[in-house]
Image (cartoon, rainbow, N blue to C red; front, top):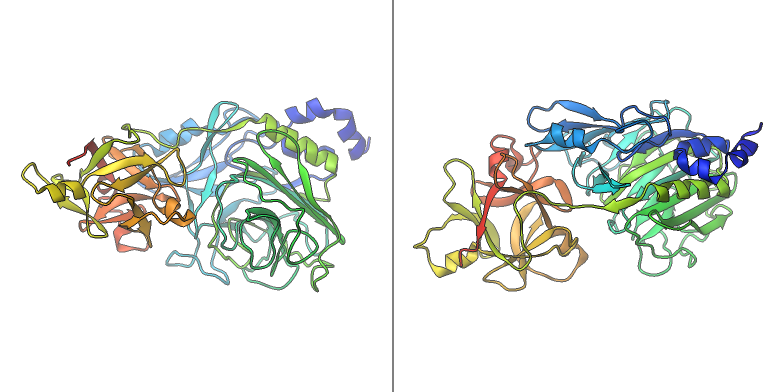
Length: 498
């Protein structure tokens, strides 16, 4: 029986019950890479999905599905990472080819770490549920990226391939480039047509779709294309589904872009036709590396959230992609709580007292625009008490988390900029909202509350030399020093002092 006949014979119900890569294989376009931190992408897969490393002792563990073909065992991660921070170090390839994704090395754009490598994603930045079972996605902050330059079986030159990814359609920016797909093998821009990757965001430097974005486009190197026209495809709409299915496929002088709500409904085709007429894209010169969260030359200013994705060898049929979309919808992606630990009630006034030994008489406060810790007591001035009091608001960027408005400067909030905390007036911008949104968790020391930055899940509100930062547990900045980190990011939440 041919592979096409095999696909037809299985029937839609059986295909939905299978994994996405079982569906692709039945259509004759087998996965050469399958990456997900949320679930198995083959019905029988029970191996490791991803690896996490904890900050307390730098040991690692692998997270696998709860059962063959099932959802990731988030409880195993939670238990391993309890009382410390964790990073996602490896996203394993489920195809059996060993095309795992690891920390992206330096390229045309160097990473933010001292050795030039990109950052790794925090392990708790993107909690979700699948069919009611908790899992974690990969929350990519600017500067974060994963890569594999030695891929087995990937399409090269003008060979046909397909790919899909499930993203958070509300998490994006206009920087270059939040990609998943085929890229250069040397981390450099080697010319037009040397990439073929899914891009998601609102960048307009090279091309755009209709509306204000974000859009699903194809990064073909030196161009983000929404269709054949290098500048505009008005049939490519702005999309913002919380869970978003994105599809790109390419072959000899043909390619397509599709998208759809990953939680309901079917795929829509935004482009299906010939390659761009700009020189270098027909024929293509694909090199076969795999990237996540960055451009082919390691451009790493973008942000986004990745839940699952695959790459195939061969040009998938529309019927296969429709069945994959049905499978994704049947996984029932849904949001879940972003916070834990002591309650923060929207509208209430709170204080945050340091728990580090020798500093327990200090509260998170501000002097002018600078956020710092200050000694506050019952005999302190009313002005100082107000400077150390914060009103809890729903998160400006994500209402599942919180923002902290200054008690003595109405309309001003704690935000981070270059990882330093300040109090600034809300300018209504997307960036301000993201920088002023924080997600409290149970205190890393076992008491109180630790507060991570929504947009940088590896970074937590910390006092260091009595100044406020969003700091990582180890890193290139002085305020990232791992010594005393857990205590410095743990706060006692109390009533407002004013």
